[in-house]
Length: 380
Image 1: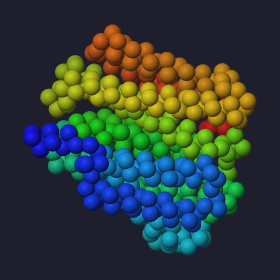
Image 2 (image 1 turned 180 degrees about the horizontal axis):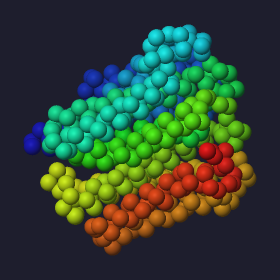
Image 3 (image 1 turned 60 degrees about the vertical axis):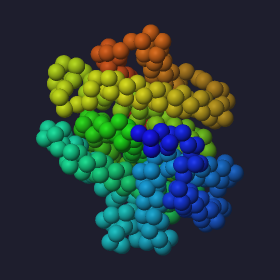
């Protein structure tokens, strides 16, 4: 306990060791390498994003060591994949490691398989109360996230191989953002899993992630949506690079909260109670997830309004997507108000969180399917 208190009393810089500084140096070196090699593709905003991301991931890696290892792994494997291409897109079907492992589509398919295996293993661990199986499931989830991010990074490079005018960050269509949703939701869960020791919840959280995996597989094989397409004019903006990721941190956190709410409701009814964390832990995790999601969703909404002003001449036009984004925001604002100001707890908020996922899903996907408007470029 004395060691823990001494650690907590130190500032962040005082807690850093040589490994932390080496990690930051590697991240910075990678950013400088990317700038030297690809600066002619970048404008001032993209250069700012590049080095801003280096600072952000250095800080996050210092705070969460596992994330730092993930960043290094994604960087090394992505660079290895890029090197194998040798500037030729056709090598994706000719080189063994690209064809079967680390081209963008191969890596994303491995991500899908590993998420399914992780879910099955988490449920097996919960049923058998096996700590070893839970550790295996957690490791499978980490590897799935690794492959998913490698897939997105390599896809980014592949888009420029097709053509300079085609190249773009891979967060521009439903296929790409569903991959991003899986990764962000899994990372949020893994953070809380390590912080609160909640491996018993992995099976629940992987349910919503694998629902997205199912969509990715359908969208790939039925619609061939994995093919890289040029951006529509409305998406050719630096705003997309920050608006979309912020939005999906919100979506991922809300989805995590809903799955925790499902576990809460089952436990409160005596189902799996002895196997799940206490109701107090579940309630706290549900609250933290919604708080994080609400903060990022608020930022994303503000960024979206600024983007709309630049693209369409007005901050708000009551487009269906904008209207449903406001409904989602008001829903979770009310949830947090009742939790923080009124002190409400228990099954009511858990049911509300589950219903909130339905509202969020419609705002995310249903609007694209059933409504039309300025955001109709994301239709199915």
